[in-house]
Figure 1 (cartoon, rainbow, N blue to C red):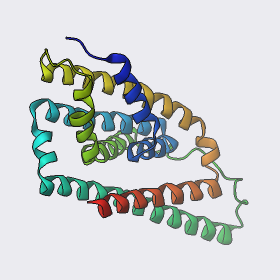
Figure 2 (figure 1 turned 45 degrees about the vertical axis):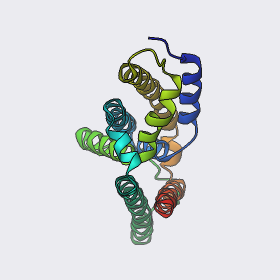
Figure 3 (figure 1 turned 90 degrees about the vertical axis):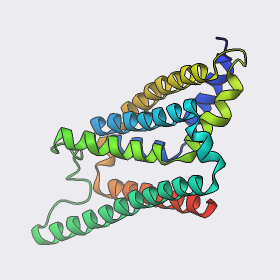
Amino acid sequence: MSVDLVGFLGVVLVAYVVPGPDFLVVVRSATEHPAKGRAAALGAQTGLCVHMLAAAVGLSLIAARSPAVYDTIKLLGAAYLVYLGVRAVLAARRAARERDAGREAAGGPADGADARTPAEDGPVHGRWRSGFTQGFLTNVLNPKAALFFLSILPQFVDGGGSTSRQIFFLGTLDIIIGVAYWFALVAVAARLRAFLARPKVRHRWELTTGWLFIAIGIGVAAAA
C-alpha cells in the first residue's frame, strides 16, 4: 500500500485549523470543564469514524449522489447547530438575569468579584455524556465530513491497492491527528476558564458562541 502521506497530512492539518462547528463545540465545552471538552473531542472523532466506515463501504457515496438524502442530513445538522446556539443564548440571558436579581436582593459584589471556575461541582458523568453527545451529533450530522472522505481521501490513495483499506488507514490517521489536536486545544481553552468565569466575560462568550452556532446553522440550511 502506497499513499501520499505528506500531502494528506497537510490537507488534514489545514482542515482542523480552520474553525468550524466542531471547533466551537470543543472549545465551548472545554471552557465549561476540561473533561467535557475532551468528551466533546472524542465525540466529534467518533462521528468521524462513522463517516470513515460509511465511505469505506460506499454508503456515503449513495448519500452524496442522492440530493434528498444529502439535504436531509444537512438540514438535521443545521437544526442541531441552531438548537445549540439558541440554548447557549437563552442560558446566557437567564444567568445574567439571575445574577442581576441576586445583586439587587443581597447587595452582592460587583461584576468580576464573584468569578469562579464554571461547572466545577457538576457530576463528571453528566458533563462527559453531554460533551460527547454534542461533539458526536455535530460531526455525524455534518455531510461535509462524509464528502471529505469521498472527495479528498481518494486523491491520496494508490489505485493499485485496496481502496477500502487505504481509506480506512488514512481515516484512522486523520482521527488520531484530530484527537491530538483537540486535546491540545482543550488544554489551551481550559487555561482560559478563570478569565471566562468572570460574569461579564462569560455572558459575552456565551452570547457570541451561541449566535455563531445559529449563524452557521442558518447558513447551512440556506445552502441546502
